[in-house]
Length: 228
Ligand code: HEC
Ligand code: HEC
Image (cartoon, rainbow, N blue to C red; front, side, top):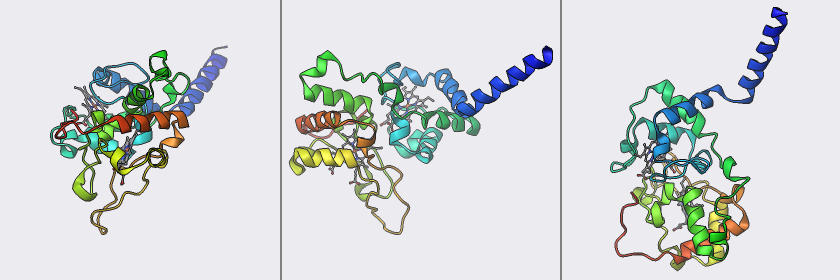
């Protein structure tokens, strides 16, 4: 009897370990333990001071996430994101968790499919801009300024003037297809670590349409301010 019980137990342990990456589960515990959710939303829960991280594993790659958590100020000197000085194995677990976040918890219930936004495409686009995490790269209100390596100007573009350079259809195509290989400033140098994702893989056409309407509504408000 005892032998049987331990067999059953063993079977349970091994299925749960293979179904879920144990590193990612540990990373989730660190995420809660460090209070990352004071500033970041995942799946609708958390504070919205920093970018929503529900899609973070879709928009940023593993190597960059690791660099960022190692020292956010080394990538962006004036960022309010704190340096947690975490050990390597803690960082590894956190990154393993973050890369699993590809928008799944917004797949069943899209938070922007709310009656408040139903008749206002610009408002809906603004909400998606926030929750899909466009702000993580282009800043709040699309003011831009987030650093990238080995690109002309060293920054991710501001979006407050895109309506001048693109028609609505062109904007939609840009958002849908992204720019998988950004042009390098120095052709002999390293590949840029951040690229514009192809949003059609995770967003629907009506959502991309609302995003384009939102971008067209953005006008430069004097000098570009800080995103954070
Ligand atoms: C992971 C970072 C990242 C995220 C997130 C991101 N972008 Fe971008 N985006 C970029 C980069 C980098 C470029 C510059 C692409 C290039 O090399 O031309 C860009 C370019 C653009 C452009 C063209 C700008 C121009 O002047 O040519 C538009 C429009 C745009 N993004 C919209 C969006 C929207 C809408 C979202 C959210 C659904 C989004 N981006 C999310 C990184 C990002
Ligand atoms: C005090 C608020 C705060 C806390 C706490 C915090 N962050 Fe951040 N985080 C930010 C802000 C603000 C940004 C945007 C940075 C910028 O553009 O300057 C950010 C950016 C990020 C990004 C990049 C987001 C993107 O869209 O590219 C990741 C990943 C991240 N934080 C992860 C974490 C993790 C993991 C923790 C916990 C260990 C954490 N953050 C704790 C404020 C915070």
